[in-house]
Length: 183
Image 1: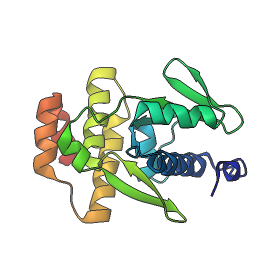
Image 2: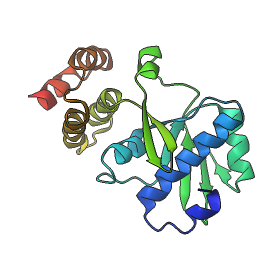
Image 3: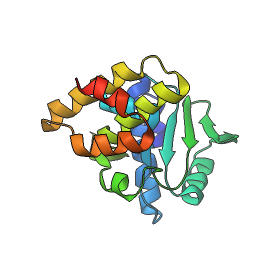
């Protein structure tokens, strides 16, 4: 799979996932830590396109990511890189996860095709992200997506890490919303 191959992919969900995998591969080849997908694109990956987003938010090494995106023909406007022909938008949100070292340890690796891998924020941390969006940004669908993520995690591993979720929810000020989701 190459960047040119992405031009032939019509499904935007598949295209974004494969793009991130190619970016991760290139960043790693240059000695950087693979970027971690967060936000809406993480939700899109976990729900296999049930949720759709317009951009890809990542955390990772800025200098290498910027270098690769520039070489691949992306343009930058503010914090967002975009490639008009591919219709791919990338938002760089920092070097590491804001949630800390425990969240970094919990990052999930998802295989997206032909051995290509994408690092994605954990389901538990994404649940807290969605609940924070409900509380602080009035995202009306966040509760529903948090419930979906609980079910995704149960289907994949049998359970969510309830202790970790409760701890993260308390520190994020969303424990009341989490309790609603877990009922």
